[in-house]
Image 1 (cartoon, rainbow, N blue to C red):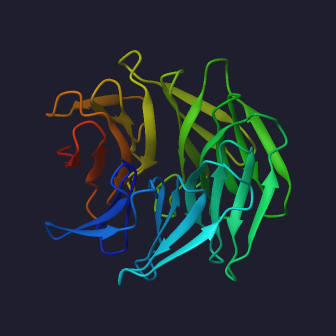
Image 2: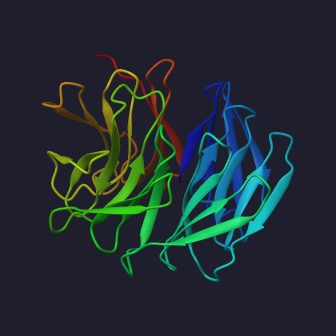
Length: 283
């Protein structure tokens, strides 16, 4: 279950098997039926108008307005397995193509452009856009973090052996503005990377936790989901302390994550628990 938050602190998430999107607002869930074959996955909310962009198994990128209007954009490369969706400051919508080794973009006029990642078989699993409109992506297949710069050039930075990056994020509201965050599912770590490629890793206390998604909040704390250990993790702003919080539902399989920058609460999706969870920090 992937999720995102809009400008009014409403939570959006996808029901992968049901082919639906759901908005949770003021204790009420509103469901948008996208179709059983859509398989909505990674989400990005345009905070200006509240609409949602997401990737779908049918090999297209989808735009859903709050009024329920659905527009689909077929991806030129067949069987691309689109992963990770996010927008830049110009209104372009970026996504990763896991199976075709490309980064794609839906331009504001609806045209889709694709860019080949330099390293073959990189299997990009997610992406994010920084404050300079550079597109960062996790190369899960080869253990690298890549970036497609605004000027069109690529850089790739290798992680230590066994890194296997998965989730990656940057938020305009995060306190540490000069880094992009990512998870290492096999390396069992949270990592950060600077514009110049400097990588810092933070090992999680619980072995084999399988960290999936990560995000920094407005206070500088970095949160992540531990899918195989049923926990939410927090790397505190001092970068010295890591705390883990057990989810009440057993074997819930937390995956998606979003932080409310207004009050600091952490929302997460339980893929096996079939629930939406919220963690409210008390310290």
